[in-house]
Image (cartoon, rainbow, N blue to C red; front, top):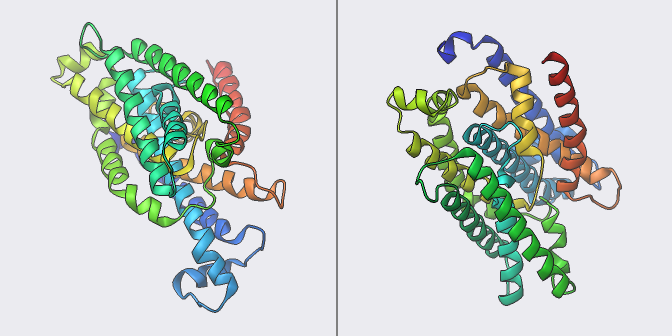
Length: 339
């Protein structure tokens, strides 16, 4: 196996290019909205805010928080998707297959019906609870009997848990549709009306999960060669798989807690990064690439969602599906031609 650093020239340039695009998109995200603000004014609002300037106030109180949260959520979902595809060895896997999105959504619906959720922190707590319960159920079912991790069984268990929680959610929405109207926009996915305080609460967990994902890069490369080879090389395969599953649950659960049900980011971004860098790229480059391009995709989707039917706003989850589906079909068709 060729060490990842010996074939790093192309990934480095792709990563630098992605970071530059991300910085440009971040500034544009501060500018675009109901009122267009010039880039110079937006940058000045960040580094030298004037509390009497309405444009500065708009940037610092509204657009900054939604841009930062879109950036973090996109990175989390993309890395979770990358880990999920490696864990199941399935290029069509995404965090939703783990049942995390469905579990978080169901938990929020239940808590909204039986408890009074008055703050975004309470919504996030309910979402995280549901995400961890769903992830634990999928892992327990996937290892039931043999006690060993089975990628195929995990995918089937995730599909079953997703269908189960999804049907329960639909039933509750039908029973109490009027009482749950206030969270329907959240369920479709949105980074609007979010405050940075919500991110600060989850940032330690996200940071630990991202660091853990990068530290797992080399074991994941070995794991991709197969269980027998990885065990033959002395790797503790079960432990690596369990930690990967925990990282997926934390990253996807935090993303759903902050922004609701956003699809296609975790599925499409790993494929984009592999196409840009190399199909055989090591996870030492793939994971940072997914962080950057996942954040970039969600920032762009959020900007388009703000203006496409102005003055109304499309939920960002709808926008990612609209942008992601054609791109994914294109990548599949191109891969089939080259295959």
